[in-house]
Length: 271
Ligand SMILES: C[S@@+](CC[C@H](N)C(=O)[O-])C[C@H]1O[C@@H](n2cnc3c(N)ncnc32)[C@H](O)[C@@H]1O
Image (cartoon, rainbow, N blue to C red):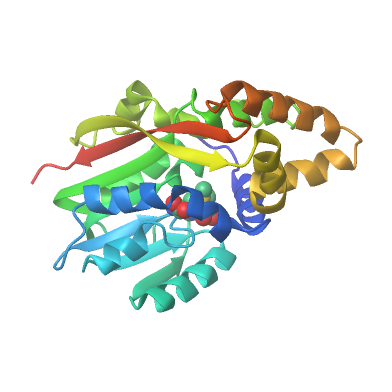
């Protein structure tokens, strides 16, 4: 695919720099711990966490004794992770870089993980091939990604209506949450794939308070608000989002409770 994705990646960097991602990451801490465990992080294991953010996978993996490298596109999040790792008393080697062009030799790691991370790299086949390339024979890749029908998939679709469309060649990030599509991404890698659908609870005081918090801390929401406010269109999106959160809400006492679904892919490479 000869499409120029540099602008798209600048957009990703700006999006995850906006707001307060380390705060957002607390909502999915349990997923990070699960991914580290599922990857079998332990002493003697060299693990790469791709699109590592503030350390949701890499820090638990390092606490479990693995030798961990974390790679991310966004310098602000690598700085946040540096502080988090220090506070946790662990060492993580942090590298600024792109999931589509991993700056590591082939067969460098026993485990490669990505939690709601590699799904945001625009060229999905390129990124999948990179994960497989840097994983040693007999190693394992573990990826967590929101599904299209999850709360997050639905919020992406609701806000996409108001945004300029991405190039048609690029598949939506949530396609990493579709088993058949992930099988196609790893075609040719000889990996044996297995899948698990899981969910993480999102719990807040009310749908409106969840949305207000998104507007302050969640990069994509912060950016959408800034872009649409200047065109006088934000209130429309805000109404759609609130209606969506109310519709998805499983609580009947005024609080907000949603099980946000994600797919875990485990790719076991042949020895
Ligand atoms: C939702 S956050 C997830 C962070 C972390 N894995 C976690 O579980 O909290 C998405 C992350 O993907 C990173 N990212 C997006 N596109 C990337 C790319 N092409 N290469 C590397 N990192 C990327 C962002 O900088 C951001 O840290």
